[in-house]
Length: 520
Image (tube, rainbow, N blue to C red; front, side, top):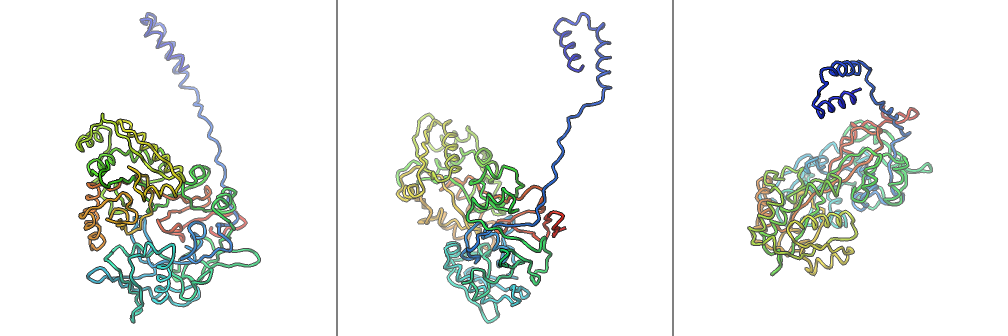
């Protein structure tokens, strides 16, 4: 009837409405009758009841070490994080929060950091955590494949007579606590496949398989969402994905750029921030086109970061204009430069580049990562508005790396895992190991050193970021996030922080089937 009234009204308007008054009453009566009919609302499909599991199971690699210094990333790392604890944990803003460390202090030069340990921190065997335990773990970490790079500035670690840990640095770096989220194990147990830790759970193995059981003597005295966590063997990442999809394990952390189709499927997700930055690097050497910082600034301004993150990464990353996570208080959001075609063209003219003068550039990217390759093609395509021809050259990793080292490129699409103290010396410092573009600038080097030594890191970071924006040795694009997957309705309260999936684990609610309601 509503459609009839609309059609009648339209007919009146088209025909001059000669019979409007005669028909008005009929239409109004018809409309009134329509309004009096009971509304027919579409039936909403009934929500399916969640299928609660019998137990909260996790994947692990049977026969592989759980030593947190030498175990690999992924499922084994997740299990280890429930067995061991670090001196500090990173919060959601990448700031160090003391855990096994109670307090710390610096010498005036910022080269010696003295840590006081908690007196109530106990290992799972009931023995007290000591400085000698910490020192042995740090010394092993300094020699390990996993942690050697982040601790490269540590000259030594020792225990003093007061039972404190004294860490000496080769150069000042007051961001050291952000590097010390390294799990600590009991001295003398590091060669075991399951060293002794201070964490909330213990590993039990036997004829019935492997599982984690609550450490009833845990020094933090917090509650456990479940007392027992069965472990299911996964030989590799693909096996772990299958175990999750078949509901044999209840939680899994993935890199969405590897598993985007899986992440966007039937799973409950929580983002876990990382220090992994994607960026465009410039070849600044000699007479190369991008030796001009004004041109580098213009190019950086032309990158549609937010659009790229949305289109290529399904918003599973944070757009960034600076080489610091936007979640960090050190990120100067007010300094971000806006981006548009007009502004980019104006910036190019200021750099002495005629947008009508075609340029041919080569952008290198590793073919081993389809998401990076897609992002590189997106950036190349977006420059077509400037009449520049950007050719994306996809190379296998070894060839890609060789091309960077030889300097045979104009631009490259890079990805780097930064340290949480935001030390950028290797990336943009003169002679830096990852400074493939050959960028060198005395002012930048001085500001890098000043930032590391500064007591007020916020002010020093702002000065450094302003300089990097002006000189543009690289063009940051985004910081990736990992994704923590759980099955819908099974787990509540998942809120991972950068280095710890199980943040606030004592407050999680884990719903199990009626036959095994451990957490209710």
